[in-house]
Length: 286
Ligand SMILES: Cc1cc2nc3c(=O)[nH]c(=O)nc-3n(C[C@H](O)[C@H](O)[C@H](O)COP(=O)(O)OP(=O)(O)OC[C@H]3O[C@@H](n4cnc5c(N)ncnc54)[C@H](O)[C@@H]3O)c2cc1C
Ligand code: FES
Image (cartoon, rainbow, N blue to C red):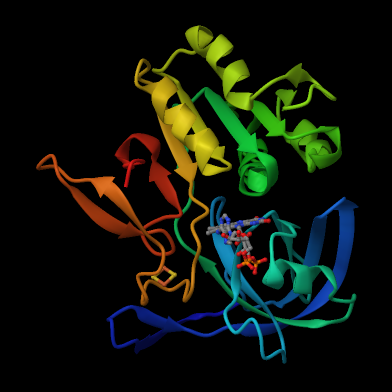
């Protein structure tokens, strides 16, 4: 992955360049969902939970721009490292990824953006994953598992998907979390209904003093969570999946409105200032 350099872009942001990597495996895990493992050079930076990479198929004319994908897993080996992404085919770029053969070449820029922050005193981590939002949260859960046994928080994960067929990444979540609570819109697995409905039912059991919620999913899910949290004081960090272009903070293509201290608003870049934000900071109406 790109190493930080001292060179700066005209906007003042540090210049970073993508590195060429080999696809070690590109495996379909459900209809329209894939896990891609990438071989990275030993000199790559170690990603933190919540960070993402910009991925691009090498040698293609279009799409010209990389696509942002969260780090799903990362492991160092003797000669290099393996990075995994879990992705859903959404359009041109991800469809192209889904056809990459094992041994194919890609360009990876990252790790980019900020991380989920779990302070040492936190005893309960509540993860709320909608669809492919499971990717960064699974990486976060595995990080929390890595903490000293006596310092490990209890992790409860609420996972929502349209139907049982679209529930991906459950095996890893079950390995890292104390409890995985499943919801499907059509009732084909777990609770019948939205993930936020199930979360709402359990809200009163939450002690906001030692708990934190970390969420990633479609904006409708995050918006509903913002409504629920109006009546609760628990801290909540979310990963935003805004459309991106440069991924480096230069083009302002990923700007979102956040509350400013004076009662107004200002714009923040998801790629550079996020993708992790305090849920209560965001303005959803804009
Ligand atoms: C920080 C970050 C992390 C992400 N992590 C993951 C991940 O781990 N796995 C994963 O599957 N996806 C992830 N995404 C979303 C992913 O980047 C988009 O699905 C992808 O860029 C779509 O590219 P495309 O060329 O396939 O689709 P396009 O042809 O560009 O668009 C197809 C459709 O998808 C919509 N779309 C495009 N980009 C986004 C987006 N960012 N969010 C929602 N809808 C979009 C378009 O409006 C359009 O309707 C992440 C996005 C961000 C910003
Ligand atoms: S994608 Fe260019 S500033 Fe965020």
